[in-house]
Image (tube, rainbow, N blue to C red; front, side):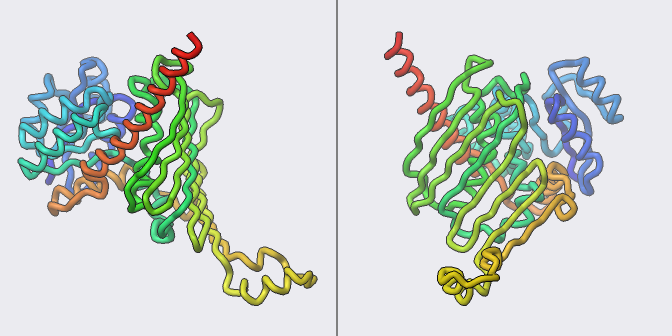
Amino acid sequence: MIKIGVVGVGHLGQHHAQKFQNIDGAELVGIFDINEQRAKEIAKKLNTRSFNSYEELLTACDAIDISATTTAHYELAKTALLAGKHIFVEKPITSELAQANDLLKLASERNLIIQVGHIERFNPVILKIENEINNPLFIESQRISTFQPRGTDVPVVLDLMIHDIDLILSFVHSPVTDIKASGVGIFTSTIDIANARIEFANGAVANVTSSRVSTKQERKLRFFQNDAYIRMDFLAKNVRVIKKSSDINSLLPQILMGAPNINPEQLLDIKSYDADDINKDALTIELESFIDCLKNNKKPIVDGEAGTRALEIATKIINQIQTQNTRINLLYR
């Protein structure tokens, strides 16, 4: 039985703690939060223990789930690793790249596991069709949300866009060669809406947009590759895979010659999956995977290196936006 502690029981952390209580092979030993009243309320709700300090919680567990604010990730994770504990840390792994690299070094020296909470890797929508995605050459993502104070301690690139950055990097196995980005802060002092064009050495291009100042919610991802167009709607839990039909070689010349009674859709092989086919819980799948890695000493699907790669690209996007906005401000001062 893997003894788990959860630090940070806000919006996400309370759900993590609850999920661990129902995962085979996991034992939730307790929680800690700097908001003592909040910790006691969640502990009572989940019938678990609220520890008086983070250090006390660490002594009672084999692994720690870090669901605190992003800016606290590094110190919490470093303390856990130095105490010999495996860690699950919510995305992004840290707020700064140097911090992430330091955690990788500590984990490697101590043979400890780091899993980063890029939950979309475990989204049933992705799991349903990941084998269909093969060498995509153009990717388009839109992740927009209504404004919520939660998560505004970091730019939208680290809050939302990093989900899609991680997904794209997991399917495009080629180095990033160029990034062009723009963005602006609207409701906060940091970046609230951003767009980035990411170019890869193999010719692939990703156009990524994220916003937390919209009047609607949208989470869509599209892959275009030589043999297919794959469209995913994460909110609607809907997937459509469009490929050339086996009849295209015989039908296309007839259509071009104006042959009647041939439906152009006969040229396409369309597979659709909806919520009835994809009715699973991504968070449970993700945390079950973490426990499985600990029990069987397996490399996590989203390990510390993957989390750091996503952070590296996100950091470059943020730096480019900030440099561009500084230049514009100086120009029009």
